[in-house]
Image (cartoon, rainbow, N blue to C red; front, side):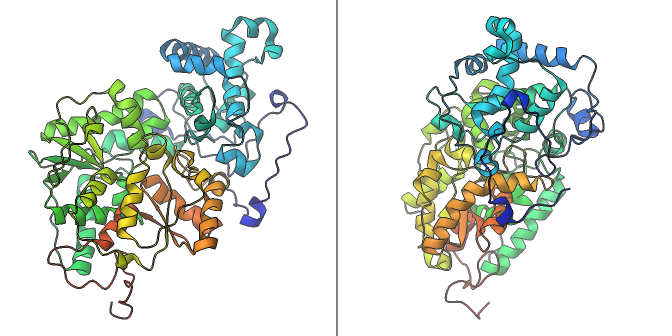
Length: 536
Protein backbone atom coordinates (compact mmCIF):
# COMPACT_ATOMS: atom_id res chain seq x y z
CA UNK A 1 0.00 0.00 0.00
CA UNK A 2 1.46 3.39 -0.93
CA UNK A 3 1.79 6.35 1.40
CA UNK A 4 -0.83 9.02 0.80
CA UNK A 5 0.65 12.48 0.20
CA UNK A 6 -0.21 15.19 2.71
CA UNK A 7 -3.07 17.62 1.88
CA UNK A 8 -0.75 20.53 1.08
CA UNK A 9 1.04 18.34 -1.48
CA UNK A 10 -2.13 16.88 -3.01
CA UNK A 11 -3.86 20.25 -3.30
CA UNK A 12 -1.19 21.42 -5.77
CA UNK A 13 -2.87 20.03 -8.88
CA UNK A 14 -0.93 20.35 -12.14
CA UNK A 15 -3.27 20.87 -15.08
CA UNK A 16 -0.48 21.04 -17.68
CA UNK A 17 -1.24 18.43 -20.36
CA UNK A 18 1.47 15.98 -21.51
CA UNK A 19 3.64 17.05 -24.45
CA UNK A 20 2.60 14.01 -26.45
CA UNK A 21 -0.89 13.30 -27.77
CA UNK A 22 -3.18 11.18 -25.65
CA UNK A 23 -2.83 8.12 -27.85
CA UNK A 24 0.95 8.37 -27.62
CA UNK A 25 1.00 8.84 -23.84
CA UNK A 26 0.74 5.42 -22.20
CA UNK A 27 -0.92 5.14 -18.81
CA UNK A 28 1.40 5.00 -15.83
CA UNK A 29 -0.28 2.81 -13.22
CA UNK A 30 0.55 4.60 -10.01
CA UNK A 31 0.08 2.95 -6.62
CA UNK A 32 -2.50 4.67 -4.45
CA UNK A 33 -4.61 5.24 -7.55
CA UNK A 34 -5.94 1.69 -8.01
CA UNK A 35 -7.51 -1.14 -6.01
CA UNK A 36 -6.19 -4.68 -5.67
CA UNK A 37 -7.21 -7.24 -8.28
CA UNK A 38 -10.00 -9.74 -7.64
CA UNK A 39 -9.19 -12.81 -5.58
CA UNK A 40 -9.85 -16.06 -7.45
CA UNK A 41 -12.32 -17.35 -4.85
CA UNK A 42 -14.64 -14.38 -5.37
CA UNK A 43 -14.68 -14.73 -9.15
CA UNK A 44 -15.30 -18.46 -8.73
CA UNK A 45 -18.26 -17.73 -6.43
CA UNK A 46 -19.71 -15.43 -9.06
CA UNK A 47 -18.86 -17.94 -11.84
CA UNK A 48 -16.84 -15.27 -13.63
CA UNK A 49 -14.06 -16.22 -16.11
CA UNK A 50 -10.29 -16.37 -15.60
CA UNK A 51 -10.01 -16.52 -11.78
CA UNK A 52 -6.30 -16.32 -10.80
CA UNK A 53 -3.92 -14.46 -8.52
CA UNK A 54 -2.78 -11.25 -10.18
CA UNK A 55 -1.80 -7.69 -9.37
CA UNK A 56 -2.15 -4.49 -11.42
CA UNK A 57 1.53 -3.86 -10.65
CA UNK A 58 2.53 -7.07 -12.48
CA UNK A 59 3.84 -6.87 -16.03
CA UNK A 60 1.92 -10.01 -16.94
CA UNK A 61 -1.79 -9.94 -16.01
CA UNK A 62 -2.19 -13.64 -16.92
CA UNK A 63 -4.78 -13.10 -19.61
CA UNK A 64 -6.20 -15.90 -21.76
CA UNK A 65 -4.54 -16.26 -25.18
CA UNK A 66 -7.63 -15.09 -27.06
CA UNK A 67 -8.21 -12.03 -24.86
CA UNK A 68 -8.48 -9.58 -27.78
CA UNK A 69 -11.04 -11.73 -29.56
CA UNK A 70 -12.98 -12.10 -26.30
CA UNK A 71 -13.09 -8.34 -25.74
CA UNK A 72 -14.02 -7.43 -29.31
CA UNK A 73 -16.75 -10.08 -29.41
CA UNK A 74 -18.02 -8.74 -26.08
CA UNK A 75 -17.96 -5.21 -27.44
CA UNK A 76 -19.95 -6.24 -30.53
CA UNK A 77 -22.48 -8.09 -28.39
CA UNK A 78 -23.08 -5.01 -26.25
CA UNK A 79 -23.28 -2.64 -29.23
CA UNK A 80 -26.00 -4.89 -30.66
CA UNK A 81 -27.80 -5.28 -27.33
CA UNK A 82 -27.75 -1.78 -25.84
CA UNK A 83 -28.96 0.92 -28.24
CA UNK A 84 -27.94 3.72 -25.85
CA UNK A 85 -24.37 2.40 -25.78
CA UNK A 86 -24.17 2.39 -29.58
CA UNK A 87 -25.55 5.95 -29.69
CA UNK A 88 -23.08 7.13 -27.05
CA UNK A 89 -20.21 5.66 -29.11
CA UNK A 90 -21.26 7.66 -32.18
CA UNK A 91 -22.69 11.04 -31.20
CA UNK A 92 -19.98 12.72 -29.12
CA UNK A 93 -18.61 15.81 -30.92
CA UNK A 94 -15.84 16.33 -28.34
CA UNK A 95 -17.17 19.79 -27.41
CA UNK A 96 -15.55 19.48 -23.99
CA UNK A 97 -18.57 20.63 -21.97
CA UNK A 98 -17.99 17.70 -19.61
CA UNK A 99 -14.21 18.06 -19.45
CA UNK A 100 -13.87 20.00 -16.21
CA UNK A 101 -16.92 18.54 -14.46
CA UNK A 102 -15.38 15.29 -13.18
CA UNK A 103 -14.14 15.31 -9.59
CA UNK A 104 -11.25 13.04 -10.55
CA UNK A 105 -10.03 15.44 -13.25
CA UNK A 106 -10.42 18.43 -10.92
CA UNK A 107 -8.51 16.61 -8.20
CA UNK A 108 -5.80 15.02 -10.36
CA UNK A 109 -5.33 17.20 -13.46
CA UNK A 110 -4.98 13.99 -15.50
CA UNK A 111 -6.58 14.65 -18.94
CA UNK A 112 -7.66 11.02 -19.21
CA UNK A 113 -9.98 11.66 -16.29
CA UNK A 114 -11.91 14.14 -18.43
CA UNK A 115 -15.14 12.22 -19.15
CA UNK A 116 -14.82 12.93 -22.87
CA UNK A 117 -11.31 11.48 -23.01
CA UNK A 118 -12.08 8.56 -20.70
CA UNK A 119 -14.84 7.60 -23.11
CA UNK A 120 -12.42 8.04 -26.04
CA UNK A 121 -10.31 5.24 -24.58
CA UNK A 122 -13.12 2.88 -25.54
CA UNK A 123 -14.46 4.81 -28.54
CA UNK A 124 -11.08 4.67 -30.27
CA UNK A 125 -11.13 0.86 -30.21
CA UNK A 126 -14.77 0.90 -31.30
CA UNK A 127 -13.88 3.09 -34.29
CA UNK A 128 -10.91 0.96 -35.22
CA UNK A 129 -12.91 -2.25 -35.32
CA UNK A 130 -16.53 -1.33 -36.02
CA UNK A 131 -16.58 1.79 -38.24
CA UNK A 132 -15.57 2.09 -41.88
CA UNK A 133 -13.80 5.40 -41.37
CA UNK A 134 -11.79 3.98 -38.51
CA UNK A 135 -10.79 0.87 -40.42
CA UNK A 136 -9.63 2.91 -43.43
CA UNK A 137 -8.22 6.07 -41.87
CA UNK A 138 -7.06 4.68 -38.55
CA UNK A 139 -5.65 7.31 -36.25
CA UNK A 140 -6.89 10.13 -38.50
CA UNK A 141 -10.43 9.01 -37.65
CA UNK A 142 -9.64 8.68 -33.95
CA UNK A 143 -9.17 4.93 -34.15
CA UNK A 144 -6.57 2.66 -32.61
CA UNK A 145 -5.87 -0.99 -32.10
CA UNK A 146 -6.63 -2.98 -28.98
CA UNK A 147 -3.20 -3.63 -27.49
CA UNK A 148 -2.03 -4.82 -24.08
CA UNK A 149 -1.15 -1.21 -23.23
CA UNK A 150 -4.63 -0.03 -24.22
CA UNK A 151 -6.20 -2.76 -22.11
CA UNK A 152 -4.24 -1.67 -19.03
CA UNK A 153 -5.24 1.92 -19.72
CA UNK A 154 -8.90 0.88 -19.84
CA UNK A 155 -8.59 -0.91 -16.52
CA UNK A 156 -6.78 1.99 -14.82
CA UNK A 157 -9.16 4.74 -15.90
CA UNK A 158 -12.50 2.94 -15.92
CA UNK A 159 -11.83 2.10 -12.29
CA UNK A 160 -11.17 5.81 -11.72
CA UNK A 161 -14.79 6.64 -12.52
CA UNK A 162 -17.44 6.53 -9.79
CA UNK A 163 -20.29 6.43 -12.31
CA UNK A 164 -21.67 9.53 -10.54
CA UNK A 165 -23.05 10.99 -13.80
CA UNK A 166 -22.20 14.62 -13.01
CA UNK A 167 -20.68 14.91 -16.49
CA UNK A 168 -23.98 13.85 -18.06
CA UNK A 169 -25.75 16.88 -16.52
CA UNK A 170 -23.56 19.17 -18.64
CA UNK A 171 -23.46 17.14 -21.90
CA UNK A 172 -25.53 18.91 -24.60
CA UNK A 173 -26.18 15.55 -26.25
CA UNK A 174 -27.18 13.77 -23.05
CA UNK A 175 -24.37 11.26 -23.20
CA UNK A 176 -24.26 9.25 -20.00
CA UNK A 177 -20.56 8.53 -19.60
CA UNK A 178 -21.35 6.32 -16.61
CA UNK A 179 -23.06 3.91 -19.02
CA UNK A 180 -19.81 3.78 -21.00
CA UNK A 181 -17.87 2.99 -17.83
CA UNK A 182 -20.38 0.26 -17.02
CA UNK A 183 -19.88 -1.31 -20.46
CA UNK A 184 -16.10 -1.07 -20.17
CA UNK A 185 -16.19 -2.78 -16.79
CA UNK A 186 -18.43 -5.50 -18.22
CA UNK A 187 -15.85 -6.10 -20.93
CA UNK A 188 -12.97 -6.21 -18.44
CA UNK A 189 -14.89 -8.76 -16.40
CA UNK A 190 -14.81 -11.09 -19.42
CA UNK A 191 -11.08 -11.44 -18.66
CA UNK A 192 -11.38 -11.60 -14.86
CA UNK A 193 -10.17 -8.00 -14.53
CA UNK A 194 -12.25 -6.70 -11.65
CA UNK A 195 -11.10 -5.32 -8.31
CA UNK A 196 -11.49 -7.24 -5.09
CA UNK A 197 -13.26 -4.36 -3.40
CA UNK A 198 -16.08 -4.95 -5.88
CA UNK A 199 -15.99 -8.71 -6.50
CA UNK A 200 -15.62 -9.45 -2.77
CA UNK A 201 -18.80 -7.64 -1.67
CA UNK A 202 -20.65 -8.89 -4.75
CA UNK A 203 -19.69 -12.50 -3.90
CA UNK A 204 -20.69 -11.96 -0.28
CA UNK A 205 -24.06 -10.61 -1.37
CA UNK A 206 -24.53 -13.54 -3.75
CA UNK A 207 -23.86 -16.07 -0.99
CA UNK A 208 -25.04 -14.33 2.21
CA UNK A 209 -27.49 -11.65 1.05
CA UNK A 210 -25.32 -8.66 1.98
CA UNK A 211 -21.99 -7.11 0.99
CA UNK A 212 -20.36 -7.65 4.35
CA UNK A 213 -21.16 -11.36 4.45
CA UNK A 214 -23.04 -10.97 7.73
CA UNK A 215 -24.74 -14.16 8.90
CA UNK A 216 -28.37 -13.89 10.10
CA UNK A 217 -27.41 -14.23 13.77
CA UNK A 218 -24.79 -11.48 13.33
CA UNK A 219 -27.37 -9.12 11.88
CA UNK A 220 -29.73 -9.75 14.78
CA UNK A 221 -26.87 -9.51 17.27
CA UNK A 222 -25.65 -6.18 15.89
CA UNK A 223 -29.15 -4.72 16.09
CA UNK A 224 -29.51 -5.98 19.66
CA UNK A 225 -26.42 -3.96 20.63
CA UNK A 226 -28.13 -0.91 19.16
CA UNK A 227 -31.34 -1.69 21.05
CA UNK A 228 -29.39 -1.80 24.32
CA UNK A 229 -27.89 1.62 23.55
CA UNK A 230 -31.31 3.04 22.69
CA UNK A 231 -32.72 1.74 25.98
CA UNK A 232 -29.84 3.34 27.88
CA UNK A 233 -30.48 6.69 26.21
CA UNK A 234 -34.30 6.72 26.15
CA UNK A 235 -35.39 4.12 28.71
CA UNK A 236 -37.42 2.43 25.97
CA UNK A 237 -36.95 -1.23 25.01
CA UNK A 238 -37.60 -1.78 21.32
CA UNK A 239 -38.45 -5.20 19.89
CA UNK A 240 -38.14 -5.33 16.10
CA UNK A 241 -39.21 -8.40 14.15
CA UNK A 242 -37.15 -10.44 11.69
CA UNK A 243 -38.29 -12.52 8.71
CA UNK A 244 -41.92 -12.26 9.83
CA UNK A 245 -44.48 -13.41 7.30
CA UNK A 246 -47.57 -11.26 6.98
CA UNK A 247 -45.95 -7.98 8.05
CA UNK A 248 -47.28 -4.99 6.11
CA UNK A 249 -43.84 -3.60 5.19
CA UNK A 250 -40.44 -5.12 4.41
CA UNK A 251 -37.64 -2.77 5.47
CA UNK A 252 -34.33 -2.97 3.58
CA UNK A 253 -31.27 -0.86 4.26
CA UNK A 254 -27.55 -1.10 3.37
CA UNK A 255 -25.63 -3.58 5.50
CA UNK A 256 -23.18 -0.79 6.29
CA UNK A 257 -25.85 0.69 8.56
CA UNK A 258 -25.71 -2.50 10.64
CA UNK A 259 -21.97 -2.63 11.04
CA UNK A 260 -20.01 0.58 11.33
CA UNK A 261 -20.32 4.13 12.67
CA UNK A 262 -21.81 6.50 11.73
CA UNK A 263 -24.18 4.20 9.82
CA UNK A 264 -25.16 2.42 13.05
CA UNK A 265 -26.56 5.68 14.42
CA UNK A 266 -28.70 5.94 11.29
CA UNK A 267 -29.97 2.39 11.92
CA UNK A 268 -30.79 3.34 15.51
CA UNK A 269 -32.80 6.20 14.06
CA UNK A 270 -34.84 3.80 11.90
CA UNK A 271 -35.52 1.57 14.93
CA UNK A 272 -36.68 4.46 17.11
CA UNK A 273 -38.88 5.98 14.40
CA UNK A 274 -40.61 2.69 13.57
CA UNK A 275 -41.18 1.92 17.25
CA UNK A 276 -42.71 5.32 17.91
CA UNK A 277 -45.05 4.90 14.94
CA UNK A 278 -46.00 1.33 15.90
CA UNK A 279 -45.21 0.37 12.32
CA UNK A 280 -46.06 -3.16 11.17
CA UNK A 281 -42.74 -3.97 9.52
CA UNK A 282 -40.04 -6.62 9.44
CA UNK A 283 -36.33 -6.82 8.70
CA UNK A 284 -35.07 -9.64 6.53
CA UNK A 285 -31.83 -11.47 7.28
CA UNK A 286 -31.87 -12.74 3.67
CA UNK A 287 -32.56 -9.51 1.78
CA UNK A 288 -30.23 -7.76 4.17
CA UNK A 289 -28.61 -5.43 1.65
CA UNK A 290 -30.02 -2.42 -0.11
CA UNK A 291 -26.86 -1.66 -2.06
CA UNK A 292 -25.88 -3.48 -5.21
CA UNK A 293 -22.20 -4.06 -6.00
CA UNK A 294 -23.30 -6.06 -9.02
CA UNK A 295 -24.06 -2.65 -10.49
CA UNK A 296 -20.30 -1.99 -10.66
CA UNK A 297 -19.67 -5.31 -12.38
CA UNK A 298 -22.30 -6.15 -14.99
CA UNK A 299 -25.96 -5.59 -15.71
CA UNK A 300 -26.59 -9.31 -15.33
CA UNK A 301 -25.05 -9.51 -11.84
CA UNK A 302 -26.85 -6.34 -10.76
CA UNK A 303 -30.10 -7.92 -11.91
CA UNK A 304 -29.38 -11.08 -9.94
CA UNK A 305 -28.63 -9.17 -6.74
CA UNK A 306 -31.61 -6.84 -7.14
CA UNK A 307 -33.99 -9.77 -7.46
CA UNK A 308 -33.42 -11.01 -3.90
CA UNK A 309 -35.26 -8.03 -2.38
CA UNK A 310 -38.36 -8.77 -4.40
CA UNK A 311 -38.13 -12.52 -3.91
CA UNK A 312 -38.09 -11.92 -0.15
CA UNK A 313 -41.01 -9.49 -0.33
CA UNK A 314 -42.97 -12.17 -2.18
CA UNK A 315 -42.00 -14.92 0.29
CA UNK A 316 -42.96 -12.85 3.32
CA UNK A 317 -46.19 -11.65 1.75
CA UNK A 318 -45.66 -7.96 2.58
CA UNK A 319 -47.69 -5.22 0.90
CA UNK A 320 -44.79 -2.95 -0.03
CA UNK A 321 -41.13 -2.18 0.67
CA UNK A 322 -39.56 0.68 2.62
CA UNK A 323 -35.92 1.37 1.82
CA UNK A 324 -33.29 3.00 4.02
CA UNK A 325 -30.72 5.69 3.32
CA UNK A 326 -28.78 4.19 0.43
CA UNK A 327 -27.32 5.47 -2.82
CA UNK A 328 -27.12 3.00 -5.65
CA UNK A 329 -30.07 0.93 -4.35
CA UNK A 330 -32.26 3.79 -5.50
CA UNK A 331 -30.58 4.38 -8.82
CA UNK A 332 -30.91 0.67 -9.63
CA UNK A 333 -34.57 0.74 -8.66
CA UNK A 334 -35.41 4.00 -10.35
CA UNK A 335 -33.54 3.49 -13.62
CA UNK A 336 -33.11 -0.23 -14.18
CA UNK A 337 -35.32 -2.46 -12.00
CA UNK A 338 -38.41 -2.42 -14.18
CA UNK A 339 -36.39 -3.61 -17.17
CA UNK A 340 -34.52 -6.25 -15.20
CA UNK A 341 -37.02 -7.71 -12.75
CA UNK A 342 -40.13 -5.58 -12.63
CA UNK A 343 -42.67 -4.23 -12.40
CA UNK A 344 -43.43 -5.66 -8.97
CA UNK A 345 -47.12 -6.29 -9.64
CA UNK A 346 -47.46 -8.80 -6.80
CA UNK A 347 -47.07 -5.93 -4.30
CA UNK A 348 -49.55 -3.13 -3.53
CA UNK A 349 -49.23 0.58 -4.22
CA UNK A 350 -47.37 1.89 -1.13
CA UNK A 351 -49.69 3.65 1.30
CA UNK A 352 -48.48 5.13 4.56
CA UNK A 353 -50.40 3.44 7.40
CA UNK A 354 -49.81 6.56 9.49
CA UNK A 355 -50.87 9.40 7.18
CA UNK A 356 -52.81 7.58 4.46
CA UNK A 357 -50.58 9.10 1.79
CA UNK A 358 -50.38 7.00 -1.37
CA UNK A 359 -46.89 7.14 -2.88
CA UNK A 360 -47.86 7.19 -6.55
CA UNK A 361 -44.24 7.79 -7.56
CA UNK A 362 -43.62 4.20 -6.42
CA UNK A 363 -46.41 2.82 -8.60
CA UNK A 364 -44.10 0.38 -10.36
CA UNK A 365 -41.32 -0.39 -7.89
CA UNK A 366 -43.61 -0.55 -4.82
CA UNK A 367 -40.65 0.74 -2.84
CA UNK A 368 -40.59 4.04 -0.93
CA UNK A 369 -37.48 5.92 0.15
CA UNK A 370 -37.42 6.57 3.87
CA UNK A 371 -36.74 10.27 3.23
CA UNK A 372 -40.08 10.47 1.40
CA UNK A 373 -41.78 8.48 4.16
CA UNK A 374 -40.45 10.59 7.02
CA UNK A 375 -40.96 13.92 5.24
CA UNK A 376 -44.60 12.91 4.77
CA UNK A 377 -44.90 12.12 8.49
CA UNK A 378 -43.53 15.53 9.43
CA UNK A 379 -45.75 17.33 6.91
CA UNK A 380 -48.82 15.72 8.48
CA UNK A 381 -47.70 16.50 12.04
CA UNK A 382 -47.31 12.87 13.07
CA UNK A 383 -44.00 13.27 14.90
CA UNK A 384 -43.25 15.20 18.07
CA UNK A 385 -39.87 16.79 17.45
CA UNK A 386 -37.52 18.90 19.55
CA UNK A 387 -34.95 20.38 17.16
CA UNK A 388 -33.16 22.10 20.08
CA UNK A 389 -31.60 18.73 20.86
CA UNK A 390 -29.50 19.20 17.73
CA UNK A 391 -28.56 22.79 18.57
CA UNK A 392 -24.90 21.86 19.01
CA UNK A 393 -24.84 21.05 15.30
CA UNK A 394 -24.47 23.35 12.32
CA UNK A 395 -25.54 21.09 9.48
CA UNK A 396 -25.02 21.07 5.74
CA UNK A 397 -26.35 18.45 3.32
CA UNK A 398 -24.47 16.41 0.74
CA UNK A 399 -26.75 15.26 -2.11
CA UNK A 400 -25.78 11.69 -2.84
CA UNK A 401 -25.20 11.25 -6.58
CA UNK A 402 -27.51 8.29 -7.04
CA UNK A 403 -30.46 9.62 -5.07
CA UNK A 404 -30.06 13.13 -6.48
CA UNK A 405 -29.17 12.66 -10.16
CA UNK A 406 -30.49 9.11 -10.30
CA UNK A 407 -33.83 9.64 -8.58
CA UNK A 408 -34.45 13.36 -8.09
CA UNK A 409 -34.67 13.32 -4.30
CA UNK A 410 -33.65 16.89 -3.53
CA UNK A 411 -36.19 18.46 -1.17
CA UNK A 412 -37.29 15.68 1.18
CA UNK A 413 -34.02 15.34 3.12
CA UNK A 414 -33.69 19.13 3.37
CA UNK A 415 -37.28 19.39 4.64
CA UNK A 416 -36.53 16.76 7.30
CA UNK A 417 -33.29 18.39 8.41
CA UNK A 418 -34.91 21.82 8.70
CA UNK A 419 -37.57 20.31 10.97
CA UNK A 420 -35.15 18.48 13.25
CA UNK A 421 -32.29 21.01 13.33
CA UNK A 422 -32.29 24.76 13.91
CA UNK A 423 -29.07 25.41 12.06
CA UNK A 424 -28.90 24.36 8.40
CA UNK A 425 -26.66 25.86 5.73
CA UNK A 426 -26.50 25.07 2.01
CA UNK A 427 -23.24 24.61 0.15
CA UNK A 428 -22.59 26.53 -3.09
CA UNK A 429 -25.43 26.05 -5.57
CA UNK A 430 -23.05 24.68 -8.20
CA UNK A 431 -22.15 21.77 -5.91
CA UNK A 432 -25.58 20.58 -4.74
CA UNK A 433 -28.77 18.94 -6.05
CA UNK A 434 -28.29 17.67 -9.63
CA UNK A 435 -24.84 19.31 -9.77
CA UNK A 436 -23.66 17.63 -6.62
CA UNK A 437 -20.05 16.44 -6.38
CA UNK A 438 -19.36 12.79 -5.69
CA UNK A 439 -17.79 11.66 -2.41
CA UNK A 440 -14.99 10.29 -4.61
CA UNK A 441 -15.32 6.73 -3.34
CA UNK A 442 -18.51 5.41 -4.91
CA UNK A 443 -18.83 2.65 -7.48
CA UNK A 444 -16.60 0.27 -5.56
CA UNK A 445 -13.66 2.62 -4.91
CA UNK A 446 -14.02 2.95 -1.13
CA UNK A 447 -10.91 0.86 -0.41
CA UNK A 448 -7.86 1.66 1.69
CA UNK A 449 -5.24 0.88 -0.97
CA UNK A 450 -6.38 3.72 -3.27
CA UNK A 451 -6.44 6.56 -0.73
CA UNK A 452 -4.67 9.05 -3.01
CA UNK A 453 -7.36 8.52 -5.64
CA UNK A 454 -10.11 8.90 -3.07
CA UNK A 455 -8.65 12.08 -1.59
CA UNK A 456 -8.13 13.57 -5.06
CA UNK A 457 -11.69 12.62 -6.05
CA UNK A 458 -13.11 14.01 -2.82
CA UNK A 459 -11.38 17.38 -3.15
CA UNK A 460 -14.24 19.24 -4.93
CA UNK A 461 -16.80 18.10 -2.34
CA UNK A 462 -14.39 18.93 0.48
CA UNK A 463 -13.80 22.42 -0.90
CA UNK A 464 -17.56 23.10 -0.91
CA UNK A 465 -17.83 21.87 2.69
CA UNK A 466 -14.83 23.95 3.70
CA UNK A 467 -16.58 27.02 2.33
CA UNK A 468 -19.60 26.63 4.66
CA UNK A 469 -17.34 25.67 7.54
CA UNK A 470 -15.49 28.96 7.16
CA UNK A 471 -18.64 31.04 6.55
CA UNK A 472 -21.03 29.54 9.10
CA UNK A 473 -19.07 27.24 11.38
CA UNK A 474 -20.67 24.08 9.95
CA UNK A 475 -19.59 20.99 11.89
CA UNK A 476 -21.85 18.24 10.53
CA UNK A 477 -22.24 16.87 6.99
CA UNK A 478 -25.53 14.99 6.55
CA UNK A 479 -26.32 12.58 3.71
CA UNK A 480 -28.64 9.72 2.73
CA UNK A 481 -26.14 7.14 1.43
CA UNK A 482 -24.24 4.37 3.22
CA UNK A 483 -21.20 4.75 0.94
CA UNK A 484 -21.15 8.45 1.81
CA UNK A 485 -21.26 7.62 5.50
CA UNK A 486 -18.30 5.28 4.96
CA UNK A 487 -16.32 7.48 2.57
CA UNK A 488 -16.88 11.05 3.73
CA UNK A 489 -15.41 10.72 7.26
CA UNK A 490 -11.98 9.95 5.77
CA UNK A 491 -12.32 12.77 3.25
CA UNK A 492 -13.41 15.26 5.91
CA UNK A 493 -10.59 14.19 8.27
CA UNK A 494 -8.11 14.71 5.44
CA UNK A 495 -9.38 17.96 3.88
CA UNK A 496 -11.71 19.56 6.48
CA UNK A 497 -10.77 18.24 9.94
CA UNK A 498 -13.42 18.70 12.62
CA UNK A 499 -16.39 18.08 10.33
CA UNK A 500 -18.38 14.99 11.30
CA UNK A 501 -20.69 12.91 9.08
CA UNK A 502 -24.22 11.69 9.78
CA UNK A 503 -27.25 10.06 8.23
CA UNK A 504 -30.43 12.14 8.24
CA UNK A 505 -32.29 9.67 10.47
CA UNK A 506 -29.71 10.00 13.20
CA UNK A 507 -30.73 13.66 13.38
CA UNK A 508 -34.40 12.64 13.33
CA UNK A 509 -33.90 10.20 16.21
CA UNK A 510 -32.13 12.76 18.34
CA UNK A 511 -34.99 15.23 17.89
CA UNK A 512 -37.76 12.62 18.18
CA UNK A 513 -39.70 12.86 21.46
CA UNK A 514 -40.79 9.28 22.04
CA UNK A 515 -43.83 8.30 24.03
CA UNK A 516 -42.80 7.29 27.55
CA UNK A 517 -39.13 8.16 27.17
CA UNK A 518 -37.05 9.24 30.15
CA UNK A 519 -35.31 12.61 30.20
CA UNK A 520 -32.56 12.35 27.61
CA UNK A 521 -29.18 13.77 28.44
CA UNK A 522 -27.16 12.51 25.46
CA UNK A 523 -27.60 12.03 21.76
CA UNK A 524 -27.14 8.65 20.04
CA UNK A 525 -23.35 9.11 20.07
CA UNK A 526 -23.32 9.55 23.84
CA UNK A 527 -22.56 13.25 23.53
CA UNK A 528 -24.39 15.64 25.89
CA UNK A 529 -27.45 17.33 24.44
CA UNK A 530 -27.55 21.11 24.41
CA UNK A 531 -28.27 22.27 27.95
CA UNK A 532 -27.53 18.84 29.40
CA UNK A 533 -23.79 19.20 29.75
CA UNK A 534 -22.64 17.56 32.96
CA UNK A 535 -25.91 15.57 33.44
CA UNK A 536 -25.01 12.52 31.32
